[in-house]
Image (cartoon, rainbow, N blue to C red):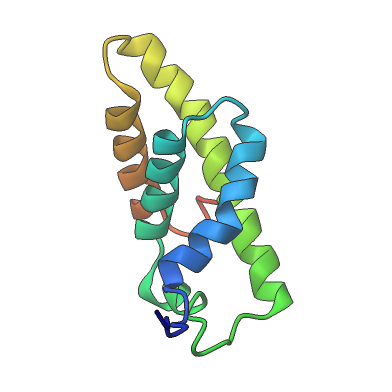
Length: 116
């Protein structure tokens, strides 16, 4: 069977780039939880930021990549900080609910607030 090589989707490229960064900060994270965090982070990107991951356009520069890696790191710091606070206040809430809630908060913040 011959398979045609299709370009990777922007989401898959984003996931490939962010997965090692997240795994470094969360040593014991499950594969499912890792996927949830990547998905939430990708969904919080603005449409013009998602364009950077379009391999067909091939427009991402090393400077933009550094910026995006920094943004991912800021998101992880934000998530770790607030997740523990929420778990203390609401010990019965599961990680999926907490991560989804924090992802929505992150998505509503402006760029200046996301610089930690």
